[in-house]
Length: 307
Image (cartoon, rainbow, N blue to C red; front, side, top):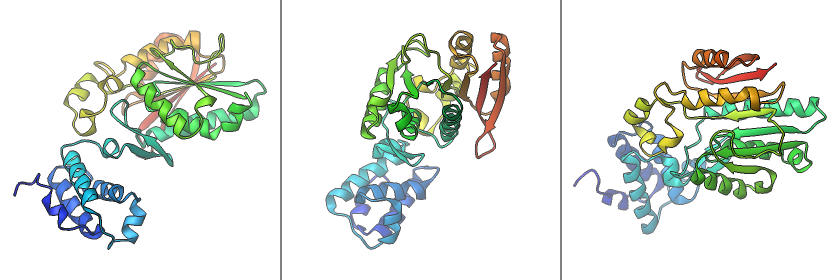
């Protein structure tokens, strides 16, 4: 029997056995996290979460669910991300709808969202005038969604104005679905266009807080990368020869587009902080620059506050 034959799963319908068989299958398929992936997919087949799965190891799947699970395991063994197979990703305690229209939200991007929310919260306390925030390259809309949920009341009262944009119309469709699923569609404006082209804030208002998770992998990294990179949209990954093509263009817009005293928060790749500082110096924007590290100690978010 070939390793791709799903039949053995049909003989072990109990959760405990399914987790073992699924883990072995995914390990053989080269998954970097076979046990976790197996638990997520088995739990998904039961329509439950991993905590329930471990609390109910003797529960059994029906034949239809077993067949679905077998197909999911084959897809994961071939490299397809679990988030695309399940159709969602748990991120920042939110369920984010995911599919190949946009990148899968990464744990490290939680730092960008949390930093942006801290920045907005501080300004709402300090300033009487309405605060304007803009997320460039919103993708699935995960970060904009987190901000909208955190500041739902401020948005409803007009104390905060929030916009999000992306150059991919398909990604914006997914973002709109995520916003609608959480009931905040009417609290922010979506716009389709390159960087800061779409009018997502009332003219002539400039953003006080600008945040962006732009593509920052090099073209070579995208072309040779494995895992989920083979399934996610290249448009949202490829940052050019040095990974900074889009960052470079956004920085060039800051002197004209970022409000006085405004802050730009950019997620960056490992080792790119020094390059971004140099690019900012070339732009000629007078600003205070600092770098925030993620949980792995990697320079992940660069904070640029205009003087």
